[in-house]
Amino acid sequence: MFTPIRRFARALRVPSVAEREMMYLNGARDMVDLEYRQREIDRGLFRRG
Image (cartoon, rainbow, N blue to C red; front, side, top):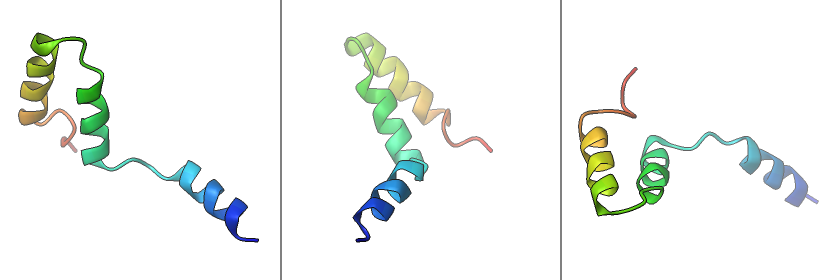
């Protein structure tokens, strides 16, 4: 009975900062791109207000 409600709630959930960072890192095409993205995250790309 509550399964459709849970699915709907999960669909509306906003990803956390850590989840967004991981998705960004997973999108890297090669090691150079990965290192560049890591430096961007270290500089606070996703943590700005």
